[in-house]
Figure 1 (cartoon, one colour):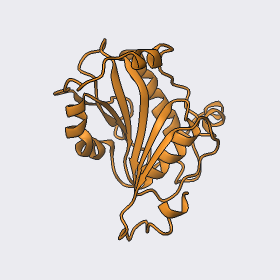
Figure 2 (figure 1 turned 120 degrees about the vertical axis):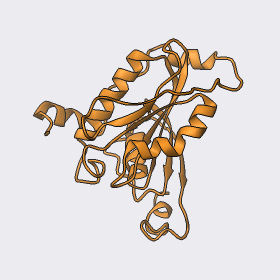
Figure 3 (figure 1 turned 30 degrees about the vertical axis):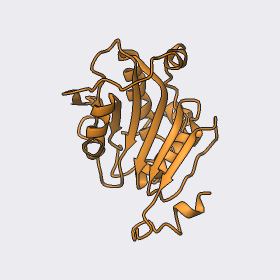
Length: 204
């Protein structure tokens, strides 16, 4: 389904409007250090998008501060694949993971411009922030096309995403730059789909 004109204009720069509560950073700064409590049996569908939806590893309790990782799949993939990959580490560390499905086979930016995927992610984040106590920093990560999207969204939304992790990205194409998120990129030197010399090594 196409976005209404006002929504297309609002999301054309890839900017997300969902934000943590105002006290989230202060809460995180004063949170006790140590090993997070494991989260178990909390994987469930988002329930927002019909056939193309996504998966959430939700916090164990709504009133406990939890760090969030937004995970973006590669072309032809799904949020379920990202959760399958990240679930063991997330459960060990007590992280919440939001892994949406792209509205198509890959992310809207790859298809020509920001739109439906930004809107869907914005809605999912807003609902998550209202239902659970998510603490800063929020991290966005992705693989392949999802890595390109994570870099592009992360750079455009550095006031939300403090850290960006990109595994084998093809490119970064932020329509704007806001904030200064920390960025980590990894890429296999024998990658034949997205060769490192034509992709990650050109990002610097």
